[in-house]
Image (cartoon, rainbow, N blue to C red; front, side):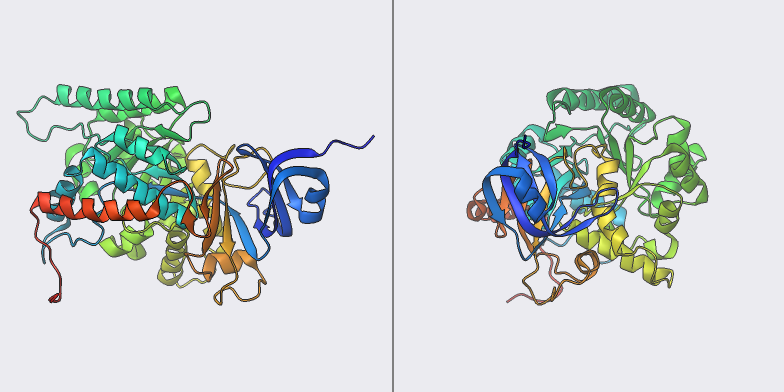
Length: 464
């Protein structure tokens, strides 16, 4: 008796598929069958065509297929609407730029502004193949952001802006911490990460020196209780280690470890200025590290001089990539990281093409605790996948799709994206939102935000 065919809603066939599965198989002339939000079959086209009965078929010949990319750190509000506005006057130190320029711009956003900003960020990410992201913790109007994101189809984890440290001795530190903890508890309750939620809230702390130990402990407790993650910024520059050494006589990761808030459900971003003892802490605790290569190089973090990311990976620390507020292309961030450390260490062999793709997929899934659902193309996993157009001069004939995609393919050559089995990008365009209207609204909102801050528009050359 013949076996019944596998029922599917969609069969995508003919692509060269980079599966990222345990065997790292690459399938020429492959096919993926999708039913609802899951992959139900994957393999060579002829085999899958014979085994599957699909309602629809999509011809993917001439494309390379990958799992959706994962962005581990991106500010989806604050930056997308004002990216072209120069922050800081000549000679201003980073701390002054942050307090006088960056934070006022972020805080001036209205709920509507943040919703539009989040939609723009989601669109930018999806058009570069990102299907899942972890937000950086600078959202003021979380409800509006979640509503805006829900229209785009993207998968993500977000967090409301939380700063629970009293810097003024006259301020009530106990109340400051309690208020911050209430925010963490409220967001996790309002947007729980359960029942296969596409969007949910996690305790995402600004980090640095902005939160008390009590807030850190509460965030870790929420993560432990709800099986979610904590994320925070730390040590992009020497200022964080200097502050912690002066306050606690310990470096940042040493202190966080001492108070019991590190672990494999914690993700720390930047870490450009850590020492060997802190590297040991990362290894011992299983804490995830997030590198934002664009931000490090533009911000002058000194990553090429003293960054320890090659050592992290060599010792088993899970490293994922983030774009921060400067870009939306996670593959480009991984590529930039590889080039940076190859040059810094004068070693062409570190961070090969295979590692670049792993950083953009599997490492991100592991850091976010989502390896059972995303990061690779396998039966039973979410149908989050990307078609990269190879009918371009930068591709030429496909000899090694992994090498070519990781190192030389154009970064914006994403043709189609599916998330949860829904096609959210087709021929480079969004399918669920009105791009033209969004961009008009975004330009108008961005100009109004800067006008409300009363910050001066600065250009290095005269614009006549």
